Length: 234
Ligand code: CTP
Ligand code: MG
Image (tube, protein in one colour):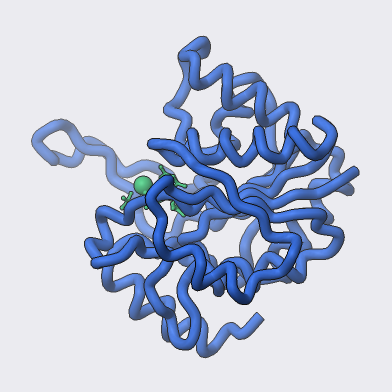
């Protein structure tokens, strides 16, 4: 089966508050999106990478200049889910519904090739519907009422933080995202691809990320990402 990667990169980076969208902020010699793409291009057997951009994106040309011919672009939407859907439709115009797609945020420039390879191998070998990179929760978790009074401590046993990439077959993911979008399911909030699949009753596979896979959200994350990029070259 074919394999495509979708990189949602149409966000505005409100929490970062930088002059330009965070995916174009420099991390050393290259901008965040260039780092992200350079981590994805060596994934074996990738047929294409589609980057979803905002309609008024002036910065893409600087990335495109050095980009591989397998990198495509399309226009994203108002929410991350809409951008992923736009990328998915682009893929489904060119590849079969049985094709695998890896959805990976532009805002995770540190993802390692070894973790992506383990995700892909685990999904292939397990026969699961799909899978995601994730990391076990490390902090002690509190449940509180509306006044921030702690009601109890929640066991973190079996709790994981979802990351990207999230890997599913294109046709099945489209069905799941469209179903969630039409509000036809009353489940947990759909904030990633996996939750849309879960709402249809599927059980995606968790694969632990063993290397840092920081989501760059706030200004301090830029400092951490720059430092980590000097230590984790792959
Ligand atoms: N994204 C997207 N389209 C949107 C919103 C987000 O493609 N309409 C992308 C972002 O560019 C990012 C990824 O989804 O690569 C994860 O989103 P997030 O980290 O929340 O980025 P932003 O939405 O840009 O940041 P913020 O929420 O702080 O505005
Ligand atoms: Mg956002």
